[in-house]
Structures are given as C-alpha cells and as structure tokens.
Image 1 (cartoon, rainbow, N blue to C red):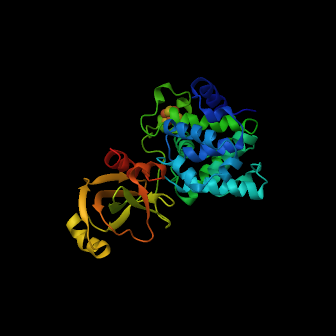
Image 2: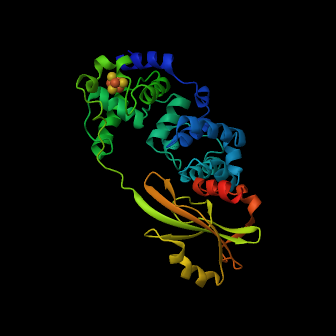
Image 3: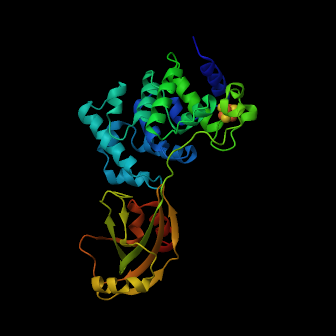
Length: 345
Ligand code: SF4
C-alpha cells in the first residue's frame, strides 16, 4: 500500500515540479551527467552545462574519447574540477570494464569513480527503477523537520539514522517518482530558509512546524573551516605572448592553466616580491597591476592580485601563448575573468 508520505509528495510533485531536461530521459549516461553537474551547482547554471555536455558528448564513448583539456574547457566556470576529471576517467572505465554500456546494478554503479551513495541511488532509481532511496541535502532537511530528528546529519550516527529512515519510507513500486518528489519538495517547498509552511501539505504531520523548530533543523555537527590563501599572479609577457603553466598538484584547479604564481602566507605588495622576481628573471618591467580580488571557494577564501611584467626569460616548465589565443585554454573562473576584462580588452 502506498504510504501517506508518498501520496502527499506525489500530489505536490505533479502540481509543482519544474520541467528539467534530464527528467525527460531514463538514459543512465545522461542522468549521470546531470547528477555530477548539479553537485554544488544551482539548477539554472547547471542546465546550460548539461545541454552543452549532451551536445558535445552525446554518448559515453564520445566523452571517453575526448581530450581531457576539451572536457575541462567545457567545464570551465562550474568549479570543483575534480568532477570533470572523474567524469572523463569514469567514461573510460565504462568503455574498458563494461564494454561501453552503463552498468545497471546499484553495486556496479556505486563502484564507478566519482559516484557516491547519493549519485548511485539517483541513477539506479531514475534509470532502472531500482529501490534505493536518495539522501541529499534536501532529503536530510525534509526528513529531519517532518520527523523531528536531532541527530547531526554529518555525524556517523546521523548518516545511519537518516539512511535507514529514508530507505524505510521509499515507495518500492515507484522509487524514481518518490525520489524525484522528495528532492523537489525539499528544494522548492521545504527550503533551508523561509520554507513555505503556510501552504505545505505536510504541515499537519510536521514535527518542526508543530514545535516551532524549523530554524533549528537539520542539525550539523561541524563548522567548515575556511582557509585563507594569498595568490600573487604574474602575467609574464614577452612581446605579444604570455607564459602559462598547467596545475598538476592535488590542489584546487588541478588540470587547469594559470600564470606564474607566488603564493604567500600573508598579504604582500609588489615591492615585497621584487627581489624574488629579479633573482628569477634578472630584468623585469611592471606594466600593469590589479586591485586585490576576493574569490570564494567552498573551503577556501582566495585573495588574488595580478601583475603584468615584461620579461625576456620564460621559466622552462612554462609554455608561451599569444594573448589573442588565451581563451582557447581552460582557466579557473577567477583567471578567466581577469583575462577577459584586463588582457583582452
Ligand atoms: S511544514 Fe514547513 S518545515 Fe514542515 S515540511 Fe512543510 S515546509 Fe517543511
């Protein structure tokens, strides 16, 4: 028998669901793409990237065969670039281990790189109607408020409590509809701030509404520590060309390009870095400098400055590119903005 929760959610969903392009398909490749793109990304922004990826890489084979630089370039601006690298890696994994066919069991899907419990449940239920409950930020919020669960959602105990509850509530005959409905309900009705409780079909059953505890739920244990970094970028200019370098370390922006960088622990000015630059390049001429630009990442706050300096030496690990061609490369959004507003203007 269908539960009260399923019946209420599905009625609400049929009235309020948004038309989103990935909801029109059961193709696991397309659903996988949409799920990875939408992690840490708003639907409005994610939609244009989803459509671009479907157009440029219509099949898993096309994605696997594409150069990683093209994939990163198409990903530019979305952030969390490890998602793009994992997409490309996993597409190749599907070609090699699954003969190019997207796996259809939960365990095989979960074993693919870059796919966690949530994404595996989403693909398994949306594409194959398998009975796995999704548990994302929206679902944690809805369940904690309706059932008044105070166990922190980021604790080991909380993860188990919510996982068991979500699975016990799943409508086994309609796992895809149920999962879509509860996520959409969390995103559109039971929002993090100012949920629309006055027009909520679940308010009579909602513990948080009855106890005036909506603002307190869900509970999180840990506060995210934000690291501050000071990045001083030098556009090394040699006639009409500039030097660039591909970031390879396991850090932010791995696989993307950047200019010559001196990272410091504290904010510094050009004069503070001058001795280091003279030592490296012998003779330099400063032709432009930017104001400090703040750039926010999920766990880091970057304070960046850009300087254009004329040099005659290019460090050996760097390559040169004509200024007019800079946009052909994949850059972090911060640097891309600087290129567009200061170097190409
Ligand atoms: S009554 Fe408010 S808090 Fe409770 S489920 Fe509805 S929107 Fe969410």
